[in-house]
Length: 444
Ligand SMILES: *Cc1c(COP(=O)(O)O)cnc(C)c1O
Image 1 (spheres, rainbow, N blue to C red):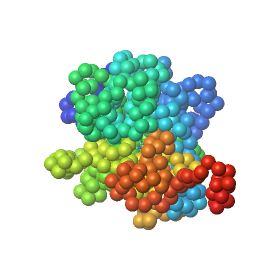
Image 2: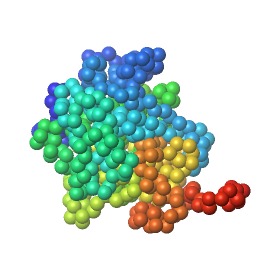
Image 3: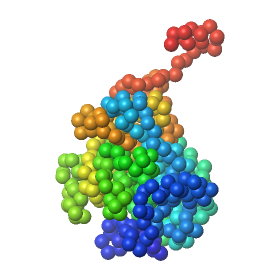
């Protein structure tokens, strides 16, 4: 706990947090957490992450760094259920975009910041497609605990996210490369300069993200859904979900687990290819590393880069691959890929259904629809799709889809294989005259 390590010095693999549960005050029932609702004047009980701190018991209360994250809810959406092909009331959306920095990353960043606080870190860094940097930057600026450096790939980051890092005062390096390059560089820099690394290679991040599962279960009165569908980028979230469920089962707090479905973008589908085409499995903790090495060697040789409008999952070398395999193994999970056309159509439906999300988030809804069509998910199943971030994170993609501006379409969407905008809600140009305006309105 006193060390700042993200990988095992001996084998180089990621670290994993393991608790000595028999020495800890484990709750007897998940219902015990409901009492925290009556103590909301205590910031730790108010936090949607830390009110579950008995299930991530690595920090003393006085070291916990919280800004009120995790006030997120499970929403029912009839419109999105219809689109996906579910029976009414069977599709739910866990809206993690309602976090302080607008994405689920705050669940993990509060935990990483807490550990950084415990070890007295002065500087923290991350590589980011945008949301991790926004989240780290908000924790650093609002608590004043450490200075922050973020590495982003040049030209890849949406303005919504870049503006957050800049506004919150993080030193922002726009690297001449993509996310996978930024990830490699930040790991090297942090190691050399002893800077606290806040990417999801940091095992404490995953501890915080476990609480998304706890909140979903709580919203369902502790009765697990049949499916949890989550977009897969670096695979930290899916790994954290799996760890949460494995631990709940171990502790005897949950008997039936949901199945996890991880959804890749087709333009960044490393997990899909390794899992579905090459048969890579957890294999009791010994995945066939040779399959992974060969896959990456070929990727480098062919110069293949991740390409998708869903920039938050535009990642070809998912750092939590192995932990994700564990999650898939424990939950009888599955993996699918969806193309940008499906993602953007699903995003428009999530918007029209009253919530809205950024493109990567909509991969979960697109994936659920695909699994419905395949017959893997039944219309009567209870399905939770994770909306990983807020709609305002990436307005460029949204406007390019909805506007009937051909130039925007050709510039933003067409290069990624998007052909139609079937659910577009285009703005209507009108002359500055009441008669013309009324003409248009009467035509609705
Ligand atoms: C980070 C992120 C993801 C990917 O999550 P991983 O844990 O990296 O798999 C998906 N959607 C959004 C909006 C994100 O910010």
